[in-house]
Image 1: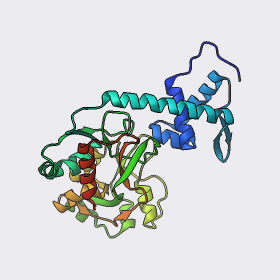
Image 2: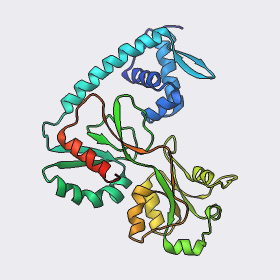
Image 3: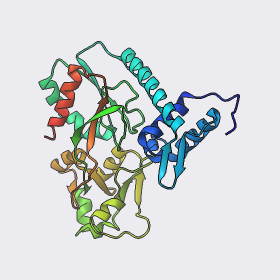
Image 4: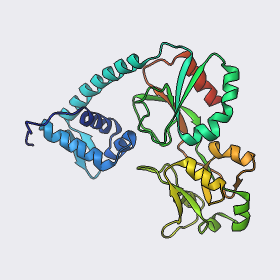
Length: 298
């Protein structure tokens, strides 16, 4: 490879390289970082040109670190861990009573907020700070103590405990369900479906749900789309269509009679986790919140 003298090795390029090395594939690294797979491939290729050496052997079976790539990955990963630990320590809050939780807007609005009174009753001494986000880019990066991600996060620098199973069920207003005359999964194919568009990879979508029900879908599924799940639920509540509901979020709306179940409830093999930084002991307030979150689904 040709050395480019005026190029510099960037922090971003190295972090993308480490993500690919730890994930074992460019696609998994892309999911981890919240960027596109071509961006990962390009960043690694650029780093190889700048360094003048090949970091990965590429084949149809995937990628594998070269010897020099493995040596570099180990050294750089150790260095970044030291930097990240120092930054986390600098960000650390001496207030043992405070805990910060990062969750999606929909989880905060429809699941967490109605339950906060119970948590405050059990732990009146704890000061809870809630950050809402509709992207997993800040997971492990912002100053939160705990994260409940939207998608599947594969990170070797984070510890995970189970929050809840991923259970899905189609939901709509009672009026819309009556008007549609839903008689089974197949009858939903032509219903006004509400689609969640995620930035790079959908955790679960309508097409996959139909597959689990043994319903063949040919061509595109029609309906309104949004990349904000809160807007999807709001549209469902206004009778604009049928939403694919994550049960832990929509179950309160079903209990209140604002939505009704119009299809089979199913469980995937990708439960939602509660994430925290590996190697950094949680403050007592964070442990109390994590334990309380888990007990909600015990």
